[in-house]
Image (cartoon, rainbow, N blue to C red; front, side, top):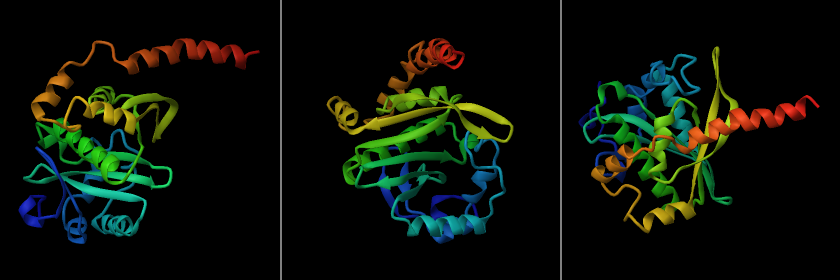
Length: 238
């Protein structure tokens, strides 16, 4: 069975312009290709998953865990024709009002608008966390090669917090991780100029296309690699 919407009719939790975020079911976990997204090396290239094979049974076990969890929210992304990925809030702390966000597009190679869908999914989930859950800070960590994706997220309020040296280790690869976050203050600042994080595809495309020739992450990386290394080597060798 494929991932067409009519085959599963998952309940819509958050409705968007181009995508919906839907509530997964045990049937979807067991019978769809959700499990197989984590077996595609292209999909998991910049994720820690993908080292061990996934199966429908393992995906069902994962589904049961997240549905019983009180600190995680996982939803399935639909482009209103098929189910294409998953997005989640994890380590939800309603006392400290913090959470982490992560997303995977599992059918990216077949979707010409995959990047647009991904950005709208992040906007919908971010807005939900602030407006409905009372969250004050949302964090994420990304492989340093996801440079353009980091900029796209800046258009919905995510800032670069720093670079974690050797923060990504998978197999023989060791790479830096870029830490990003959005705080409620910046979210509200954006709403002063837009009615929501995602005002329209047209406007979001315009913002993405206005990417600066030198992004903030480029400047920060250069500073870390020059001034940072020089500073710490002078200490370590003293």
